[in-house]
Structure formats: C-alpha cells, structure tokens
Image (cartoon, rainbow, N blue to C red; front, side):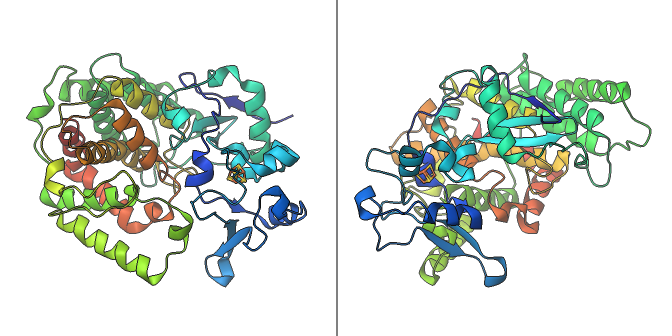
Length: 424
Ligand code: SF4
C-alpha cells in the first residue's frame, strides 16, 4: 500500500474523449525497456505500421541520448490509426502503451505525506471540463499514481518559499492553500484576484521564516491578503493601471513566441533551416513591428500592432476557465519545486501568473487572424491549450534567461501591467 494520501482536485472534470490531440501534439519519450517491449510486439504492415519507417527517433547528444516515438507524415504518432485510436492500446491493451501516454493529462506532485494531483491544460477535455469529476475517480487515479510515484515520497523536501527561505511541508502547504483561497474569491474578477495574489506573495517572499511557523503563517498570509485587497480592490478599474514598459513588452513577446511554437517531431531536433527561421521569428518578436511570423497553424500572419488595442475584456466563460486553471495549478503544486524547474514558490507563481497575459495575447492573435477585435471563449480555450502545452515541460523555461525575464516583470511591476493590459 502506498505511504501517501492522494489529494485530488475538487473543481475539475475529466475523461478521455479520444480526440487524439495528445498523440499528435506531444513528443512521447520512451525508455529502453519500453523500446524493447514495443519492438517485441512485432508490428507489421498488416497492423497498419509502415515497416520501412522507424518506430522511434533519437534526440540529444550521444552522452545524453533520449528516444521518442516516431511520427507519421501528418504529425500523428507512428501508432495512431486512421480513426484516431492507438494501435498498441487496441491490440495489446492500455497497459502495453508507453508510460507517458498512460499518465497524460495527469501530473503527480509529492508534498510530504500527500501527493497532489494536477492536470495539463493542453488536453481540450481538461480545458472544457468535460467528463466525470476527477475527485469521483479515486480508484483510477490511485492506479495511475502507482505507475509513477514511489511508495515513500515523504523524504522529498518542499521547495524554498523564496531565495533560501524554507519551511516544512505543512507550513509550505499553508501558504499554498492561502494562495488558492485568494484565487478562488469570491470577490472581484480573476484578474483582480491574480493581481492580489502576486502582490501578497511578493511580500511573503521577503519575509524571514526562521520564527514564523504554524498558525503564524496563517496570520501572516491573512494580513498580506488584506493589504492586497486594499491595493487592488475588487471594484478597481484595470484601466487605471499603467501600460507595460517597452523593455517589459519585448521580453514578454519573446516569451509568447516560445509558447506559440509546437514541440512537434521537427522541433524536437531542428535542422539548420528551422533554426534559422526560429532566429528570424525571435528577431521579429523582439522588434514587435510589421507582420507576425506564423509559428503554428491557426496563428495567422497578422500585424503586431493589431494585438495591442483593447479587445473588449474577457469573453463570457473565460472568468470561470481562468479561475479553474489557476486553482488547479496551485492546488496541484504544478508551478514550483520538482514539477517546475525546481523554482521556489514565489518565483514559480510569477511564471504561472504570466500565463494569463500570454494566453490572452495568443487568443487575440487567433481572433485577429479571423478579422475580429473581440475574444470568444473558443479563442481563449485554444490559446490556453497551446500555452499550457509548454508550461513546466519546455527545458528553455527553466534556464537563466527566461527565469530572469519573469523575475524582472515581477520586480518592475510589468507583471501587473501585462496582466491588466491584455485583459482589456
Ligand atoms: S503510443 Fe498510442 S497513446 Fe501513445 S502517442 Fe502513440 S498513438 Fe497515442
């Protein structure tokens, strides 16, 4: 029996609806054992698997080589059939598939005596909240967790709160739960609540935790929450917040460009031609003028300038979607520690908060591509799936340059400004 309690999200539904999006969008890494097992399944042309094509491809240098499932010419996994179903699953059952396919879209994050469960919003069914309540599927989730979480994970320490400030897991989770309370409301919009959360967490990051423990953490969080509500009252107009700085916008567009790409098979190991086109795209995003480069289907070559005027605020339904998204990521610890480039709580939350303007920028791009200057819920849903595809999974985001950009947003108030600016 596992030595941990599984903490399931209470506000999320999900079942697989066989859209096969994950089998087209994701590069599926396979271990040596999985390669051996799949090779032993003896796939032939009679099964619909082209014997002249490899089943997997290598990536990375020889000393850190990894393998992933090959893709067909249309981008789908080599085992995806014409009906959008998995051939391995159909022939040998669910357990015969690579581990990554069996777990998706769940993510499991140890937190002392419990393991918190989050979900990836790259899955359209997660975004649309389709299916059975996740907390009504404990048996299924326990079986899935056992595939990836060892029995004893209580020795794994929590990430720092900020810098070198550390507390134990119960106190760390007090801060996390307070953060989720702020995001849950009920006062104000999710934009106000996100601004409040960024504000008080920044102050919490400056505290010294040597003498602050237990109930005093709750008291501190409550005090800071009150100050945040005073700074960003639920009825305060966002238009009063200044526009982002020029430097902030440049850094922001470069971040958007990374989220607008797909990690298709081609991008996992780009050739020179592709590297050159990525460099040109980065230069264009840095300049932020003229026609936007096409980074994936649906993001049309509109003008950068088209995305800057007000787009009429969040469309109906987006408030609930963003509230659920941020609460799931926070509840599930999907924004800090081992789940997120080993970032401390405060820095990881800045990255999570940056997702709001990134998603709204991508949604504007989708809308402008259809000659609209107002967002719809499908724009926001699609943009969220695109952006969350990378959140926590693209190695670049854990590197110094990207981390510094997000820290600078937070230190200079550009994070607040970007959130307000793209929510108009
Ligand atoms: S192995 Fe099956 S489930 Fe996994 S990506 Fe390929 S088709 Fe999809």
